[in-house]
Amino acid sequence: MSPRSPAELRTCAALRDAGVRLRPSLAEVPVAAQCRRTSRLRRVMTTEAVVSVTPDELAPDLPFSLEDAARTPWSFDAAQGLLLPWKVPGWPQVRLTPQRQRRGVRWLYACPACHRPTRHICAVPTREGDVTGCRRCLGLVYPAQSHHRTLLGDAAVLQGQRLATPAALQQAQARDQRRFSKVYGRFASVLGHPLAFFENTDAVHAAYGQGEVRQVPHIDVEALTDGLR
Image (cartoon, rainbow, N blue to C red; front, side, top):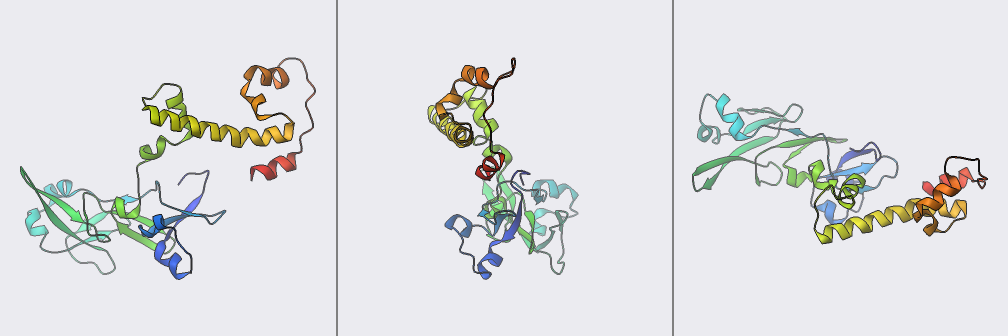
């Protein structure tokens, strides 16, 4: 998880048993991320999940064909991502399922949680134990899927370093304006300047820039700290 918002993973079943009312978006996934500081819940974005190999990568190491392997369930090791062709007590059971294509058959795993076909079986460690499933039912995404909404992603769009549609450019401008109002609005109330003052770079450098020593207004550090919390 991001170091700026430390969180731990919790199973939604344990949260329901504790009487926590989950949002509809969290009711669709078995795992939620809970902030350690505020206890707020959100969907899992990126995490260090244990991922298994695909059936195509598994086939060369098998002494038998995938058709024979699909007859019996396999055991998945959530700690190391290993798949064993026999039943291990306490390990999730995974089956291979065929998917018909124009050029033959493609073998996939059947997710032990949602039973949808998937190329990888994932496991994430939670407070209540390891939870096994596919990326979709666990709510996992790649970091690049959420990069366009981050500060660096919006900066790349606004500076022309990344191509974007007019709608995406307008959304990036709106997010950048909200960040500006949120951050500089706190300083504007403390320093006694209107918010538009910080939009003029020359005026800010003239008032607080390098060079001769200027009279800086008194800043209440405690009030500023409380406002940023």
